[in-house]
Structures are given as C-alpha cells and as structure tokens.
Length: 130
Image 1 (cartoon, rainbow, N blue to C red):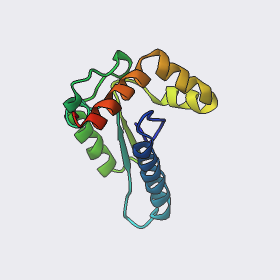
Image 2: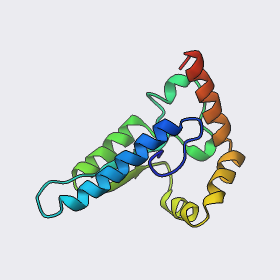
Image 3: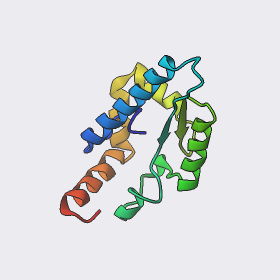
Image 4: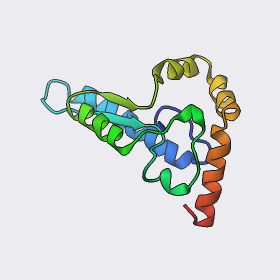
C-alpha cells in the first residue's frame, strides 16, 4: 500500500512504489488497444516475508494479509484488472477520504499506532535484526 499513501520511516521505499504505480497506470493507457495489459498490485502488510520476519505485530487496524491473498491479487491483475488492492478490508473509501483531507492520514496513522510500529521496524532494520 506504499504506492497509495505515505510510509513513515521508509520514504525511499514509498517513493519507488509511488513511481511504479504511476508508471504502470501510464503504461496501461499507452497500451490500450494493443492487446498488451499492465496492472499494479498493492498489498497491505503481508504476514509472511518482509514484514513477518521482523517479529513485530502490525497494529490491529492494518490486519495483515497472507501471501496467498497476494497471489490471488496478482492473478486478478494478470486477468486484466488495472489496480488490485490486497487488504483485509475496504480501503478505497479511506484512500479517497485521505485525498480530500491530506492532514487526516498522518493523524490517523499516529493514533492507530502505525507510525510507532513503522519506526520500530526502521530501528530493527538499522540494527540489522530484520
């Protein structure tokens, strides 16, 4: 989901995800009518892999997704979906709300513990424990 919103304490990662999403959406428009498709998959916190290895628990508001759910999202994108959000709940309304009220996103991330856990993850990465 770093392609859709900020990722505190990991701004370079977020920048690459924003860039890849923008590239894919642009490419999708350019390729229209050619028979070639481009789609982007945006998973939330994945319980296995990069997030799972930290030993940290994602805040309850984030509700981790499984690698299997991500695979199903990739299959949807391969089937023609332009953008697939792989999350445990409906996120699009929140993303739209955050676009309309940019200050709301940071406030909610702080109140729900998202900023705290991302700071903890960054500290683990610096120490080499992740």
